[in-house]
Image (cartoon, rainbow, N blue to C red):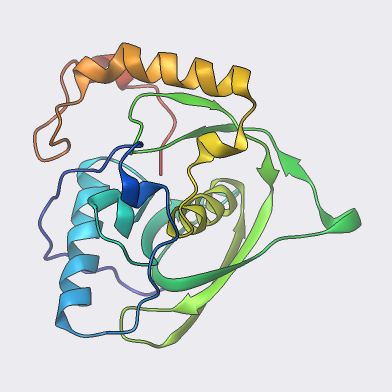
Length: 201
């Protein structure tokens, strides 16, 4: 398993509603020092926010790259960096939906059920331009789909009915005072109110 970089700085997380969150991001073409620093900062930010995945547009950067450190259905952790991801999902009789809760670090504190295939495979390249493939079940499958969506300018609220999306936004509004505008650079207020939340991406 590749080791994620440890020398990054924590950045503020960009929220839903910002333009970079809702448009197709640019493919990665330069695999130099700037990308390596971005990836390290994304890892540090994901960990500070106690998330299991983070895309570049979630720190305001218009690039198709995400990082993840996430367990599969069996509790085994997987981690990696994916640039220019391509998603492969089961079809036909192999397609089974997981209707578990989903949350997004860019809409902090809010969760709702979001049906997704219970297996996902992502291919792309890492921050050095080397080919990578990741696949799995459970939360890992959800995470790979969620983060690939981000690189395409889609948030998981786009996959919900109007009723569930309205409920999700209401929950986010309720918890908004707990998350400073520069979170997780500044810690959340009232962390005890969020102790039993599922992990977000």
